[in-house]
Image (cartoon, rainbow, N blue to C red; front, side, top):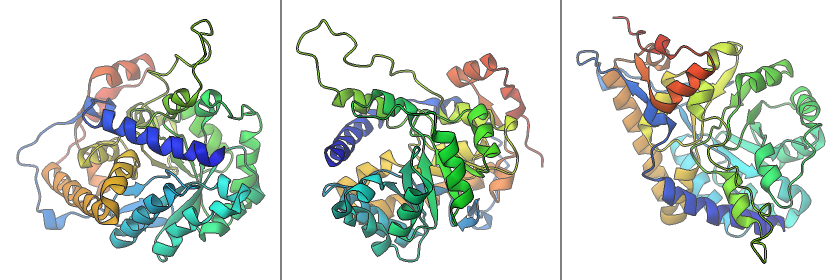
Amino acid sequence: MAQSRKDDHIRLAAVQQEQLADTRNAFDDVDFIHHALAGINEDDVDISAQFGPWTIPAPIYINGMTGGTDTALPINRALAQAAAATGIPMASGSVAVALEQPETAGSFTVIREHNPDGIVWANLGAGRTLDHAKAAVDLLAADGLQIHVNPIQETVMPEGSRDFGQWLGLIEDIVAGLDVPVIIKEVGFGLSAKTIQQLYDLGVRIVDVAGSGGTNFARIENERTPHPSNAIDVHAKWDWLEPMGLTAVDCLLEMARVPTDLTVVASGGVRNPLDVVRAQALGAHAVGLAGAMLRVAMSDGAEGVTEVLNLFKTRIRQVYALLGAANARQLRATDVIITGTSAERARARNIDVTRFADRFRI
């Protein structure tokens, strides 16, 4: 069943990405104020980023996606080869299936095989124990562990677990007992400031807000739910799918409310290099790419993913130069206008978005 679910996720996520390719999302509510004489030389720009204990060559990473099936293996191989070629960190999909069905482990270990010296993170869902976490890290000789929290997905998933009450305690055990850094991430519905504070109190120091706007796992699980044989059972499928959760922009606008020694990274609905820089300007230390990379890996393999990642690097550097930002610290001082739905939602939460619009200082 787990392998069938993983294949369903790949197939339905790819369909969603085709639909989202030209769709507006919350990142379109974030505009830089153009200062025509602010630009600097591109060669003077440093786009490296500090991601927890890791210094990475660009503010992007390949987020956790898949594993556990024959379909997933070539995707993970292509992503790993591209990560190795570019120096970009990469997370696996959830390795829980490999812990329960060791015969599927090759679709995960292929990542380390093709990226022996790079930064690799294993991935597990919340609700797993410290022993599970240690096994996941060992499986990939991983440099860190992503724990994804996905209560909405689990609720919609026909075979999902709804035992959410133990999650905080299990996360605390893993953070205290694991020898590598732990990254807590959502799966596309966002981490609020309240949730981030809860995680901080448990010892978590790296969070991925993983907002809505990209792959929607509730919709995927809804599509996997069998249709009723008649129209009477209106509860057989979930209708509460859009809008749902917080966008990455929503989450980043709340960052003034979270502890300053956290590493906050962002993902969810990131379509292009400009979205990366937008997220950084709102405070993200780095930005995750998932759906866009899945499409390229499936169509063009490692060569295509490598080309796209290198193009992201180039375009990010060029946007920095246009904005007069020599590094990420200076980028976070650029002037940004927040409008549209994101501004409305922020005002409803008593967040002042005007503070971003007058930060530039010569």
